[in-house]
Structure formats: C-alpha cells, structure tokens
Amino acid sequence: MNLTRRNFVKLAGIAGLVGLTGHLTGCGKNSAGIGSIAAADKLPPADTAKVYFSKKIDAEHLIALYKKINSEISGKVAIKLHTGEPNGPNILPRDMVKAFQAQIPDSAIVETNTLYGGARSTTERHRRTLKANGWTFCPVDILDEEGDVDFPVKNGFHLSEVAMGSHLTNYNSLIALTHFKGHAMGGFGGSLKNIAIGCASGKVGKEQIHGHNWETGKLFLERMVDSGKAVCDHFGRKIVFINVLARLSVDCDCAGAGAAAPVLPDLGILASTDILAVDKASVDMIYNFPDDRKNDLITRIESRSGRHQLAAMEELKMGTSKYEIISVD
Image (cartoon, rainbow, N blue to C red):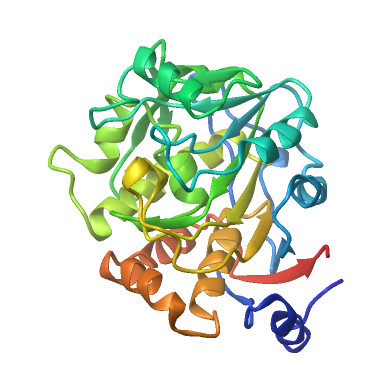
C-alpha cells in the first residue's frame, strides 16, 4: 500500500503514530585495497526513497520487510547489529534475530571491539559477553579480531580514511539491522551509528571518529558521517538498512544493564536501501508521536545536536531528499 501524507495520517491513528514523510538524501562504493566498484554498480540518484514499514515487531514482519529491499544482497552477508553490553535490557530479541538470520544464506552477525574499556574491549571479553547475551545461534565475526584495514572517505568532512575491522572485506553484502534508540553522544543511534562506529576497529577506527578527547557535538557527528560514507561506498548497492523502533530508551545498548527504561511504546520496523531516508523516517516517527512521552527522547536528540547527522548525510549525498512510507501490514 503506497501512502500519501494524508493516507499515512489515517494509518497513524491506528498505529498510534502521526505523519511519517519527510525530506532527506544514497550510497556508492570505493573499497579498501580491493579495487573500486564499477560506476554501474553505484546506487543511482532517486527523487524519492522507498521506506517500508510495519507496526508489528516480530520475525515474520522483519523478514517480510527485508524481502522488499534485498534484491541486490548476494554472496557472503554480514549482519551488523549491536549485540550489547552484558545483560542489556533493551537489545533486539535474540529469537527474532535468529529466525531472520536463518533466512539469509551464508550470513553471520558481525561486531567490533569497543574503544572504551569493559566487557567488549577485547576479543576474549567480547566473546564471553556474546555468550552471556545469547548470541550463540550463528557465527559472530568480530571484525577487528585480526586488526583493521583503511577504507577511504571520498570528499568527507574531516577524515580521508577510517580503519575498519579487517574482516569486513571478506563480505560481499551488509545488512544493518539496527535497534533505533537514543545515544549519549549522537542524540540517537540509527543505521548510521550502527555501521559508522559499529564497523570501525575498536582501537583505531573508533578513536578516529571519537577523537583523542572524545569530542562531542557536530565535529563528532560529521566524523561519524564520514565513517558511514566509507562503509556505504565500499558496499555500493549491496547494503540495506533496517531500523527496529522497539524499547525506545534515551540510552544506547552500550549502556548495558544500567540503560534507562523505554520512554515510548514500540513503534514498528522501517526498512530501506537508503540510509538517510530510514534514519530520517525513524526520527520523524519520534517527533510526530502524539503525546508528551516523546519529550525525553527529543530532549536527548536535541541536546546532542543529533539531527545534524541527517543534515551531514544529505550534504555528502548519502541518500535521497524525500521518502515515502509503504506499509506491509
């Protein structure tokens, strides 16, 4: 069902949401040491991005949404998600991810070690945390277990290259399966944060993004966009983005067991081949929620200049300027 703004408002009354269309802008491919993608394989510009939506958060609808966007996904597939600090209360349901991963041949969950100390700062500690959190049903590849490789950033804001976990070059395609939520530094963590920080190596790439002194504000956000662009350019058409708007806390899953409780009800799943469109649509869902329960999350976003992520992605032409919501329910 194609939704105009008027028709979506009608649907929103059923789903407990209000108006979900907006303005935004693609991903191309330049790779790290393995050649450049042919021009024909770059994501062509589009006037309007398609963002598929379900208000139901379960394996069936996650798989249905993925099938709407997976036509270019092939070969060895990396599923990038935030597997969380030990016993984090808000991470994506393992059973749902297990059912999803089982539908994708030659796939593995991928992660990287953290820059900050703690339970995921080394590969050994990280693997113990993965086991504790139940990520045992399929291979989990810690991308920087054997070091990193530089991905070029074409026409970025601040970075000319970013060190990614070296194993990322072993994959032909990438699925960003993202728990959308707040974030202590970015304001919100969507698909951009998932790939930009989540694929960067723990001790080199993440420091390039955060800076030696863990800078905040627009400088940090623009370096995060630089990193995300490097990943998008590397995979070209073979990258897709799914945001799960569940357990909407102001905190990231990196907050672990101490993460704040959700401030909003679960809103649904959004999926697109356009990183900017899917993150913008997710933010719009928060801002257009019909009552004051949205205020804490909006305050978190605005206090960190979080929407600058979207403006910066648009400036680097990482997506289309408009999107339409297409419900699969």
